[in-house]
Image 1 (spheres, each protein chain N blue to C red):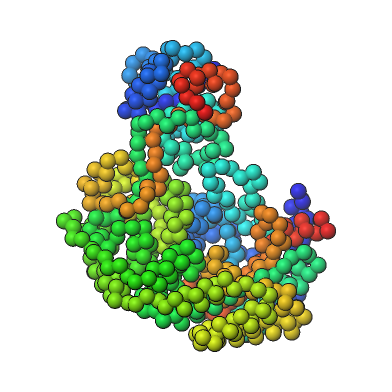
Image 2 (cartoon, helix red, strand yellow):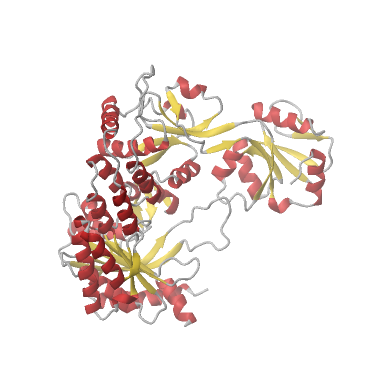
Length: 226
Length: 353
């Protein structure tokens, strides 16, 4: 039996259902809208587990589900050494989002990461503490800034409404997921002219240890080649 | 696998040797307040140190090294000159990339260390010779450097203050340093700072931005750094040779570069002082970039003893950190140098020998 984890609500769930339906596998919620049990038609020996998207990486790594749909951002942030446990089976073409670094739009002297690196140095000298970057993607942002040798900053944790931290003066810059950039603009922030820290989209993952004939059959039916 | 008890025994032997060399043993806490470590090392320390939460004391770190707590203890109540030694665990986590390492490094290991707070110019040679003696008979090679050489070299370049400060700031970040240097060696491309309708937001002030824009505008009038200087700097940064050869090369460089003459002389005196302690200077490598990729607090003499085995960190390492005592000393400062030996690695070499 293959346990397939899919986000339990919202557009991510609907688009995941559509993606499987286009490949002849009908997923649905059993019973009412509030129930998190799932139903699978069109394939044998697969069961549906509806989970919060943020928990799917952990459940996959622990082997409590064999396959799962989640964002590449969540896998890379939450699972150090993820590629040792998980296989990326197929990008699914929705849930696109970039992890980006954004600064106040009024900073006319800040276009690139080099500018930001220089500003962090001035900021620390002027204010006596390191320039604060608000994010929930601590590992990804830290690793990216370390790779680019930016040092005079600190991360502050922000689990939501991250774009508001600059106006509230609890951070000077933010690193967050954006798809259209509309929320950033509404909060008078602009994206640095760099490649994103990460380009993410909804992706079908499997636990490496769960590979076998059963999964091969399922993947063949989905038209996914590994 | 060597039992921890055996590593501990090697550590005790090293500690006893440090005591015989005149050091007083101290035992810093294992749980340290995170704040001063974060302020010193920046965000990168979080990728390496174990962070935990204390309900009363706030964020704490499992000791990632001894130097900071030893310096803090000395600055609180130490007399000069002072020699300290210690033996204990340090804790470092390995921040993984996409794949789990096949052979994870130790995340908890012993360090036996010696820290020397003294204004005696021979302190560098004293510490180096002590470490050299304790590692005699082990298959290690000694490498040394001196961060003040690069610092002085950059200070003596014909640069504006703004450019010099930027370069000095990034000496410990080789990629960024090189990019800055490349930029300063080329004509400045004038830059526009387009107006925006966006309202001011955040803690950074308009005045801070205006000051930076003025600095960048003034920089457009600065002529490029002459090629002869980038060539000399490159020759200096890539200098790596046995002691006597390196000293000859440094003295040759110093003829066109008076700003490094004093440090070159000091390096020569240090090698003489090391030789006077019975160590052949030709067996000691001098590498001008040694210490550039390590912790930011070294600002003078640096050294490491390497076993040259794949995946092994240095068996011993250390250096001078005068600026650190200034940062942690709240107004006081004292020249300081220290180093650590990893008893676990020494034990492993002894088992195989």
